Length: 162
Image (tube, rainbow, N blue to C red; front, side, top):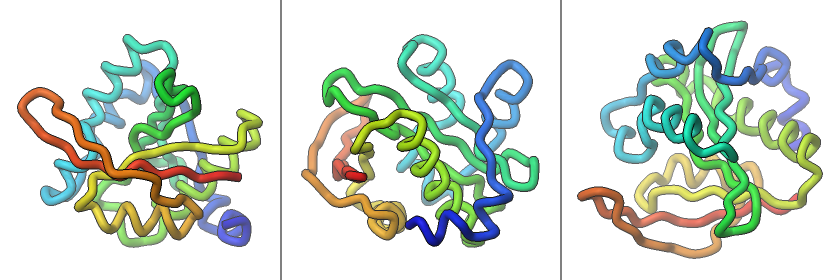
């Protein structure tokens, strides 16, 4: 992962807090139709972050343009940090930007928070995301299921240990 972080892609990526100046850009980011069941809409994530003080929303910028979104938090159930959302706009997928952004985020996250692990979860059928996380060092822990509203989810909990 460290070699990838030093790549040219990562030099062009930065993270900015989502605030009143850029939240509409974040809401306008879109996914392919087939991906929409895998990640909560950004408008929902921003509402969640507004009312849950431990959630940190970040815009992913490439060449000074917002191309993606990350939401992470300290999960009180896990008693550990968790990346709740990660998405790249459909117009910027397939170019290596997502992998570079995630690699850089992980480097920045571990440097800033001085912890040894980060959790995430992935919808069981989202093989592309699962593969991406595994290429950056995440490992599968356990499959869990839950209902949210009228929808049933089956997700794989994953962890990256530094």
